[in-house]
Amino acid sequence: MPQNNGYHHGDLRAACLRAARELLEEDGSAGLSLRAVARRAGVSATAPYRHFADRDALVSGVAAQGYRELAGELAEAHPPPSTPDGLAALALVYVRFALEHPALFRVMFAEPCDLTSEERVAATAVLSEYLQGVVRTAFPGSDDPEALATTVWALVHGLAFLHLDGKLDTSTPQAVADRVGAAVHALFALPPAARRTATAQTRTATT
Amino acid sequence: MPQNNGYHHGDLRAACLRAARELLEEDGSAGLSLRAVARRAGVSATAPYRHFADRDALVSGVAAQGYRELAGELAEAHPPPSTPDGLAALALVYVRFALEHPALFRVMFAEPCDLTSEERVAATAVLSEYLQGVVRTAFPGSDDPEALATTVWALVHGLAFLHLDGKLDTSTPQAVADRVGAAVHALFALPPAARRTATAQTRTATT
DNA sequence: GGCGCGATGTAAGCGCCGTAAACATTGGAG
DNA sequence: CTCCAATGTTTACGGCGCTTACATCGCGCC
Image (cartoon, rainbow over all chains, first blue to last red; front, top):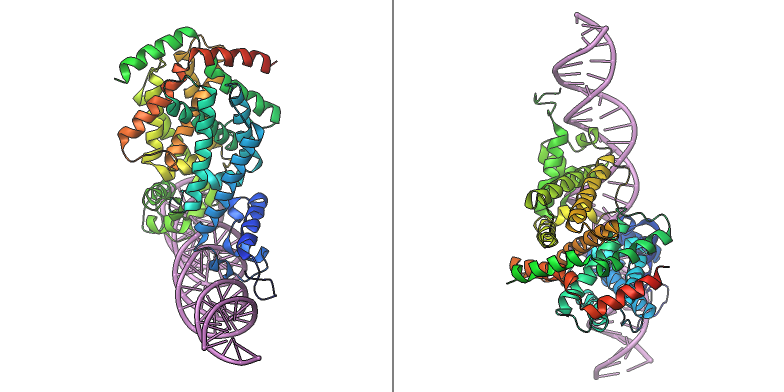
């Protein structure tokens, strides 16, 4: 294990990730540069290259951290999410995470994903499987649980992005909460006529 | 009107936007620099500043162009989208647009939005209102058409992003089409028991 | 117990970037 | 014809990602 002795840092990798998170919160992704991270860690400009192959690797590390945090918040907010209504609560946690950590959320989802970063891939798999499980227990009788899980993830993810990009009003937390709740509940309040028409057309269209 | 005489370009603004689009398609958003745009337009590095206040202004211009194109493709693909099933077709157009122009789509939706660019704001409003109209005609009896429109937009938008970020498989167009169709249809195939539970809980939760 | 080697950090430098300031060229209005 | 406003050029500055060469440490081996 390396130690902090004035020349060697001790745990520069973790310090870089921490600095990157701070810079992200303060200045947005524009302020996230390797040099700024190095400055904040109190180290020369090129030192981080011993721990990250390039800027993308650092960003992937931050993103992976973000995935784990998001998965944790979802699990904590709703440990056994077995009711459809619980989906609204989960959706709100997801959207809130995006709004409270906008730059981090963008790093996680809005940059060309480095598919070669296994840390990143693994972290997203955790998130995806968690949502799969939620949907499976919330809708045990679903015809196509996988498709429904995709639907739910996409809905929640889209809500997060539209709020984040100012396409939907975020002036008050209550407004956001109401809209997210209404959007999720709208799934279950489709007018019967439309629903019947839609399912009938589905049968013919998917064959 | 300015003319092309070897010193003055003629229509540098349009040329910059065109060059920016090309660079975006070729090298992704990483390759979109003001200097590269200037080079491609055959002009000095600082000439674009006569037409764009800064890099963000150029990006906003490109994004606005993208919004208009997307709205056009949606309208063209499905002029009077009045059936719920048509939503699946619309969703597919939206997702395809994202996958065919990934860097442009990211510029449109995945960067901190410059809310001061009226061109950009206006262009997104067009898109939003179009979707509102689609949902209103597709579900004339909806309890809360606005919430449902949000739901649909979010679903479609989320599907686009999850595919774009490699969170969902995009190896074949057919796989994408099938998944998008299934996700949209899953909305209409919720098991009745779950649906009843959900609406019952909705009534109590939203009071 | 010293020594050497791999891991880690530093220093210097390259080319690209965004942007500002001062200057040049042009067509058209008065 | 003359001057002006619009447009394009030149030069320059600091920050950035990244490479290459060099410095400093601790640990394992004899």
